[in-house]
Length: 168
Image 1 (cartoon, rainbow, N blue to C red):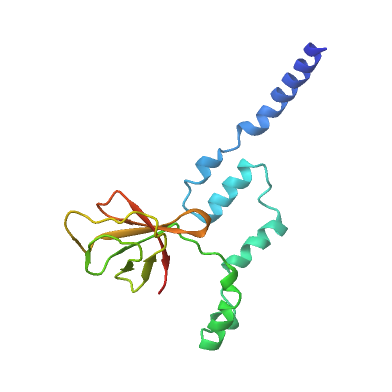
Image 2: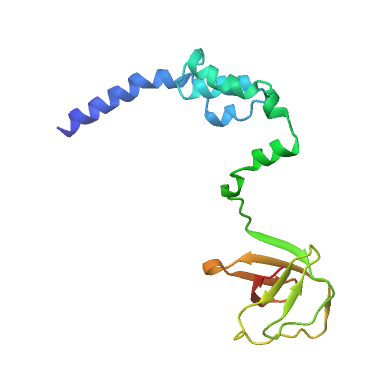
């Protein structure tokens, strides 16, 4: 019984292997510079007929010139173009900036003013106070996402982090 199954599987593999022997590898297709050549290569790699007119017509619309309404960039139309864009999530992992002035540590309710105009405030008062041995002039800071919607601020050259919230 097992021998019969192995024989059938072997026959299928042998009969299908010539069909895939002439197909390029998808990795090779990604190296092609021209869009049409790359598309034809992918079609061949995945066994799709590149002469399929219905499929080709779907991709031709992307190369057409924009219509007059699309090309018009008056303020009214640009506002209309942005309508609904607030639902598109544009999430970044972290923010890098410099502190304005000297960094002298945190004390439980410290405000951090950044060179990009943002102001962040320490949120967890139970974190022990921190004071560097000497003030650090305009250090680079990284603010990253923490757990449960929190944010953590790390000062360049300081091994500790502090939880913050944006107030401006």
